[in-house]
Amino acid sequence: MSDPVQTPDDILLRPGQILARGVCRHLLSHDFVSLEELVPTPGLRVDVMALGPKDEIWIVECKSSRADFQTDRKWQGYLEWCDRYFWAVDADFPTDLLPSESGLIIADGYGAEILRMGPETKMAAARRKVMMRKFARHAALRHHALRDPGARFSGGL
Image (cartoon, rainbow, N blue to C red; front, side, top):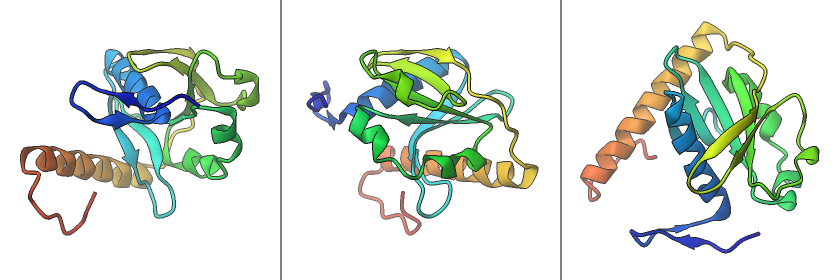
């Protein structure tokens, strides 16, 4: 596992966060907006949730090491909360460990490339509506927190 990276604005990023940054940058080039560390339901927190131009929802789990992947016991619970599911790893990760029925993204802190598209499994309309609202509310709360760091949010982030 690599050491945290110091960013220009003095924020320490862990290896998984570095991968997430590159993934989010790449997804933007596909017209997807994304949020990191979103909670679709209590007990689950996805690394990256992305919303596409046709309301498609993708989840990307970022794994920085073999141990990080092997200790993840929750990932299958994410599948029902997205239309496509991906793993994002760096170029040195042993990708043969990853389930072949999932998407695969190779990433670093500056970009990424989708090597394998995750199969499409459309969410039910009611679940999509819930996730769209959570995504919008989470994005708005984060934006507000950036503009007014001293504000107190009763719902939290």
